[in-house]
Length: 371
Ligand SMILES: NC(=O)c1ccc[n+]([C@@H]2O[C@H](COP(=O)([O-])OP(=O)(O)OC[C@H]3O[C@@H](n4cnc5c(N)ncnc54)[C@H](O)[C@@H]3O)[C@@H](O)[C@H]2O)c1
Image (cartoon, rainbow, N blue to C red; front, side, top):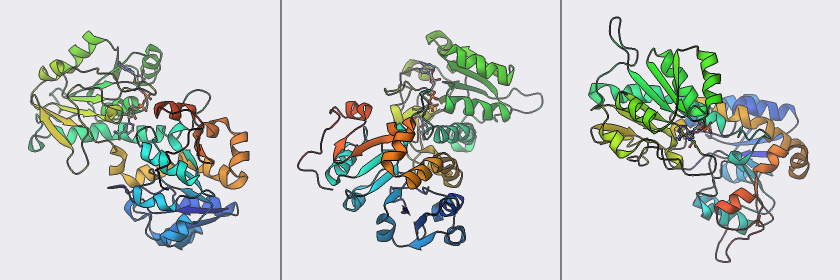
């Protein structure tokens, strides 16, 4: 099959949908991979590495002309005209958040599979998890940066010093983001409290970290106490399919230490801190009640090389299945991938996405939508 890899065009998006190693794997299986020249530059992956791996370096029209196009982010308005009925698109789509992208895909009749809705029988989202792991691992290093006095923080070193208490890091939510954040903070020698409502999950963390990470059942009083004495709070809660619950109220923020830092990773689902609003990599923090708030919606974008590898490690097997078998057979063989199908033949086919968009499955694009 012809597999196309265009350069990402979304603002500040430096990731690319496939690594040179991924290209090698596809070419070994007899597929031709058309990589747009310069597509990997933002991730420090250069054209010559792709060429050595067997990619054909092409212009943007040829990359989009492939039968299967793999990307990172949802199509941008300037890409809508490239959507067509015989195209299979595999990428993050987030159609619930971007109804206009849904309309463009439906109007064009494109077969679109979304990374974020590929779901295993266990309920796990295997193509979303790697980005949560990256964001979680980054949270303590982001927090430690903003805790430095010169950056507006209270001047506390996460690991403390011999004879001096380390910083107290409070992580809310022990899922993929939270556990990774707690683990890295503990590795930096901070004092770490990890809160979650799922006691089974806390039991699992406790067995691994044997007290190095203090696990605490999450409830209003426990959060209040933990946050009041925190130097760094990491927000990492998720209620699947829903808006993040407010776990830290404005009153709790007002009671925090001056110069403390909040990194609310859950901001893409609305955030779990009452005073949070989304920020960007170019303008990442603001201050409220003397507390620095960091809430960038695409944290992994800051480390595109690592994120590209983490993402394509997870997507490659699915890309290979689509290329080897074609969509109908690949979906028949793999129920997880079946959940990934969002649009086909001009219809919305994923019930959860259709519900989130307030439409039924089988819904078409409004007649005004242009591909
Ligand atoms: N900003 C970014 O760049 C970025 C990157 C990756 C992920 N995220 C977001 O981070 C959030 C967390 O993702 P994840 O993969 O860790 O999810 P997850 O499902 O693995 O973990 C979420 C955890 O929150 C817990 N939880 C729910 N309600 C709670 C409450 N009231 N108190 C304490 N714990 C509670 C759940 O029990 C669960 O363990 C999501 O919104 C995700 O989209 C953001």
